[in-house]
Length: 142
Image (cartoon, rainbow, N blue to C red; front, side):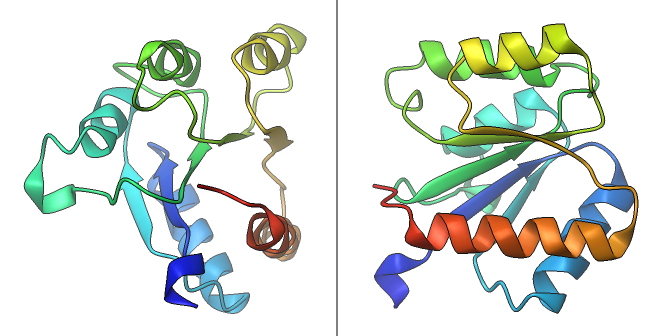
């Protein structure tokens, strides 16, 4: 089962949302390693293994991405990610509060695997995380 483990990078600046993801993972028994970046610049550093203490394995990676962040927002991050030969194939699921059509269109134009609005209640958040877990466990992520 170790070779089926998916390494998840959560790119999120809101500490409450980070805590909710961790709690939802625990409640849904999601054991995948979770890495945290507070913005797009930190996420790129983790993915490119520029910081040894937060290095992420090169295989079986998935990104959960918020769009509204300081320094480098989610769309800027996606543009940079898709231009990087070594990182462009990593699946990205947008998990955001932005219900703006332009954000959805731009995200899908940058090849996101999904666009999910953050649920308002914690129980719905747990349900979303459990559903995502089922999906990525069935997906063949290289």
